[in-house]
Amino acid sequence: SQQGEEDPQALSIQEGENATMNCSYKTSINNLQWYRQNSGRGLVHLILIRSNEREKHSGRLRVTLDTSKKSSSLLITASRAADTASYFCASSYNTNAGKSTFGDGTTLTVKP
Amino acid sequence: GAVVSQHPSWVICKSGTSVKIECRSLDFQATTMFWYRQFPKQSLMLMATSNEGSKATYEQGVEKDKFLINHASLTLSTLTVTSAHPEDSSFYICSARGRLEEQYFGPGTRLTVT
Image (cartoon, rainbow over all chains, first blue to last red; front, side):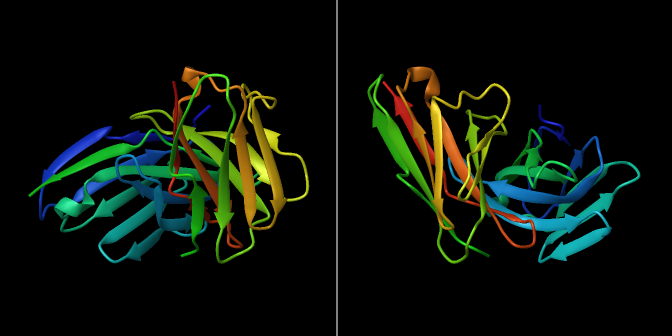
């Protein structure tokens, strides 16, 4: 069963605003990854954050990890219409041979 | 990042036929690949883990005789949907595991069974 949960399920903002998506998981992880998926397309890897890391940046993306709360957040700053997509978190657990468990995803719509 | 390709991108087949989907890691060797399926507006569900040179490990509820997986080399895994039925219509995505545990995903294959 999917262990990751994401909120919100859907988010609609104006171009230029920031978008924050959250992900929670249930057991200890090796790492957590964020992906983006445009409608009908494959997944694009955004950021991997390891269990001993608290924050990572990549361009306009910032990912945080709070292992005490078993949660992670993805912040997209200064959003653009092209950021419109679904965003998934995937957690990799210590004892599952490298498998990742995906959250339900957040659908982000950025209005121009 | 690393590149993973899938072929075909989309396929339409008749009920009862078999369809093979290829997943290739183009610029790195992947000892482990994963196969997922995704229904519209839903998340990815892991079907099986494909290990080079050994049998695939299937997730609970996935029929191994229906979804045949072969990981014949360090750059190629195939998923064959046997005796396809309309309920098998879905988006199938593979991923290859890199050295640092990250996963690189293919672009997906949309299967429609009529």
